[in-house]
Image (tube, rainbow over all chains, first blue to last red; front, top):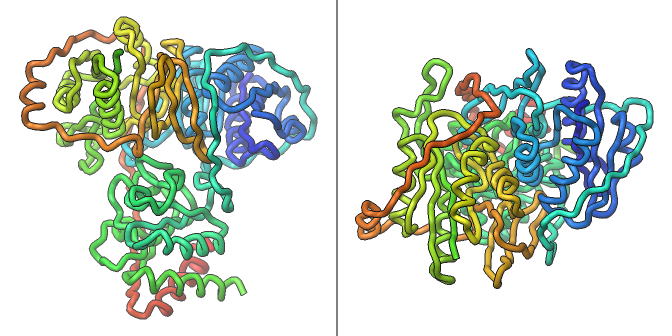
Amino acid sequence: MVLVVLDHDGNRLRKGSLEALTRARDLAQALGGKVAGVLLAEEKAPVEEARKYVEVLYTATLGPYTAEKWAAGVLKAAEASGAKAVVAPSSRQSRAYLGRVAYALRAGLLEDTLESRLEGGEVHATRYAYLNRVTQRVKAALPVVLTVKPNTTPLAEPLGGEAEVVALSVPEVPTVEVLERLQEEKKGVSLTEADVVVTGGRGMGSAEAFGLVEELAALLGGAVGATRAVVDAGWRPYAEQVGQTGKTVQPSLYIALGVSGAVQHLAGMNKSKYIVAVNKDPEAPIFKHADYGIVGDVHQVLPALIEAVKKLKD
Amino acid sequence: MKFVAVIRQVPDGESRLRVQGDRVDLSGATMILDQMDEYAVEEALRLKEKHGGEAVVVGFGPERTEEAIRTALAMGMDRGVHVVYEGFADPVAVAEALVEVLKEEAPTLVLTGGQQADWDSQALGGALAEALGVPVVAWTTALELEGDTAKAKHDLDEGAEWVRVRLPAVFTTQQGLNEPRYPTLPGIMKAKKKEIRKVQARLTPKVTLISEEIQEKSRLGKILDGKDPVAAAEELVRLLHEEAKVI
């Protein structure tokens, strides 16, 4: 049996869950077993949607997220299903609580994998290392815990049946008390899942200038990113930071506006399919990593870009 | 009170990486205290300065890791423990190797970087917390002690939150938590005399590294002149639509 952790927003499964399902099914097929799902919720979970994708579905309502509770829930489902592998979409939170799960199972932890397969009773996977600059091939014997990097894997289709739903009883664990949740303003798609990311750097000059970055991102159905300098200046929240100390993104299109291209920033976006740079300095390192670019003043080019995209859409 | 920072030594992000055979060759790289772990060292120092007690740096890795431990000592940590291990070790195995030392130290809290700059792993904090049987707060951006609890702010996938956690606990650190200090010359002199206890790591690797390769994606490098911003923008949008087909 392979267990897949189904991440969701309370109403729908996230795209990453459908990628994790594809990987889980591949492993289950190679192992000659089935796929069980675990759906952990603060309050509400898309149970009806989730049961279409797996052969048995474990659920638990746990209250506010803590790594301890989520780890306990996954461990309980792993035990109940007899899973030899746990597959989950890769996220900041999953990579924290699955560290607990892997240690508890003394399992090999394959984080943020690009692909995975069973070979000679071991799970082989590829992943990036050294700030996304190196591709590693790694392997681990079963049991394994595996996280799936977003945008690497085809999305799974429903199975055509409806899985039996099993409510888990998750033991109380020494835990963390959540005092106050600071919600991110929901503006369009989430940064790590976005297919288009528009990032502003120090060259934007002010917090106000990000109004146009938001406008371009919205036009392209994408998300706004920021560099460390921008976040340090207080123009944008940490949650939007792309780079070594921020989020890693791999969209089809990454647009870097007024971004110089420091290694720490590149580490968060250098695997994007297409990289576009706008910078007035022709020597800016970002141009060495760009597919397309404009050497010019971002304050003139960005409004023109917005107009050009609008024209295209009409 | 005792504040422990768990650190590793990694290549500087600006260093040129080479691959020799099928492994990254670090012989020409500048090796540094992982910048994410620097936030852990700085926070341990600040907690000690505010609440008293001891700040201990625990380093994991090959012999050369001693340099990174010395850097932390030069920043002001009181003493070091070096758990020596040559080669690749996954976070579960590292936690196995560190748990004995950490239990012996009985820290008030443990800090470590949110992501490792060599393996790009984010799991050590969680694995250490499980090994110690204590809670973990990941991606911490603010931390205050209040009696036998800590109040902390940390990032989630979407947004952030304030939490209260009973100590001991593990915190993973990141940018925003503090601004790490530079070692001073007197600090560097003092660090030479500070104790570093050596322990041979006992662990069973769970993950095997098969090969490594550098795959720099070659980029198209089509750079337009933006003197006429409108023309350049229209040409760029045309290329993205017709050639790259991404909009």
